[in-house]
Length: 296
Image (cartoon, rainbow, N blue to C red; front, top):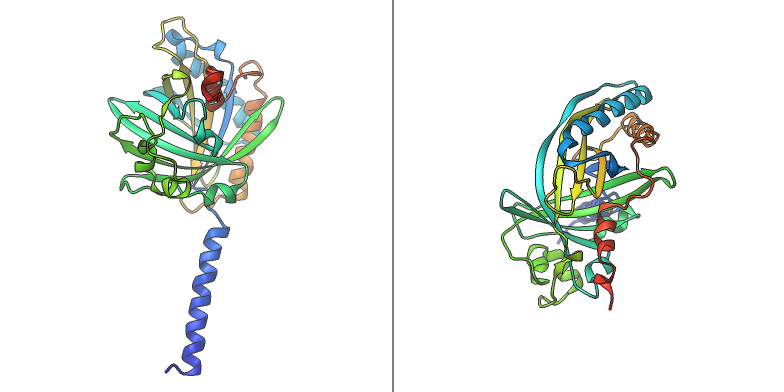
């Protein structure tokens, strides 16, 4: 039989463990923060995209440096060329209805799939179960901050898991097998048909190599261009997005870092000669390309 002091110690330990569990749930950690801005695609064409990208970067370096009095280093080079497709259930778009997107990226013949849940509420995003049985799966909670001249800064929290894929994507079993937490939570039938949203395969070009000194942490600055087909020399992208991102596995971002990041994004938003006033976000573009894809 336990003594009174032993019982009290057991109670204290149990209470401490319970409080720790509550604290973990009540304080979701943003392992990364990404800031996004849409550019006017008409400035770019395939033949000169690298030159135009670095012309933009030169202008961006100046306005960011003026805003935060820090260095922006490096130049952009094409580092990733890949194919991107989003999948959902035709006529019902059940994944979209649940707040999810399911995306496949293919590069050099290798496929990786991402299941992502978005919410303006950090806690709601974090509570979604994105667990995967795949030992190479990578899960993160990311704050996505975007801006345009009409709406200012908007923040959405993305909880996602990415994992290598060898399956042919054609039914819900391809989602459920990779993402067991989602399968257990929603119980969608493995037999539900999946198809490319809008029938689209996007050719994605990513330029990287520049960094913003935010103080105790650096942000990687990059440009992403989307084409709806293998581009010809004079073809313009349908989406041009500039972004910068910084990471910390413990979410220990200082006040100066986040303040400088906001000032940098605000400065980029004032580059009216480059910025878009009407472009859709990448996900919105995919779902809008064929409006009847989700129609009952």
